[in-house]
Amino acid sequence: MPKISIITPTYNSGNTIHGTIEALLGQTFSDFEYIVIDGVSKDNTLDKIKSYIPRFEAKGVVVRIISESDKGVYDAMNKGIALAEGELVGITNSDDWYENNALEVMWNKFTDGKVNKSNSMIYGIERVWKDDRIFNVQRRGASFLSESVLPHSTFFVSKAVYDRFDAFDLSIRVLADYDFICRCASQGVDLEEIDVVISNFRLGGISSSYFDFYSDFYKIKYKYGFISDKKYKELKYVLKFKKLINKVLKKW
Picture 1 (cartoon, rainbow, N blue to C red):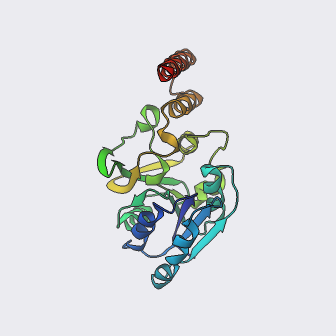
Picture 2 (tube, rainbow, N blue to C red):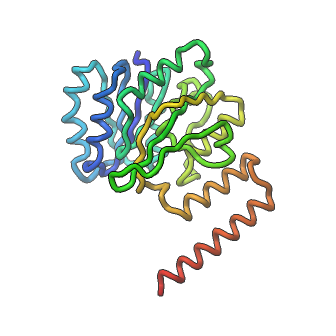
Picture 3 (cartoon, rainbow, N blue to C red):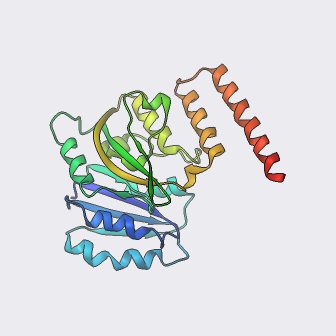
């Protein structure tokens, strides 16, 4: 059985998937499986992924590819999680990529004897890119849950945790990963931080929509008690007003 399962959801990712895959092939840790959940891509995504299989096999990595219709990226992630056989699960999108030592760093932390392997999520630093330049380097302290989000790309989650929870809530369109992390933390799952760059995230995905992002963000903050009912209503009103102004300005 592989020690780690890596999942990539794809849909028409032919122009970006090579970076994600090359980063996995360059890993210093090779005891992992690679699961691709494709939403029936119309471009050359599947052909590109399949062309890399011999290199994965040479590394001793099993690749599993599922291509079928889904209900969106979080549904694809849920399918991958259900198939995962590793003790530790990471998710990297088809336009993001891991640092070459990401899997080794995460596995070493997971097995250092200080982590509860059946009740932990490990996360590190995320480097954010925009137009092929570093836009930001995100570090998060213990209070990040109540202040901001940290996408799933830097999180490695114990499979035992995924087995106990229902993974991603499909009713949350943009920030189901943030909701999942908050849900787990609120029920006693340990969050283990590593001060190492783990993942690279490219701006431009689903969560880049300002209004959709903040609509989900405020809803989740309220759901888990980070803001009061009064504050939540105020934030929703402000967001609605900004959306209206934006709509008017676009017409002009």
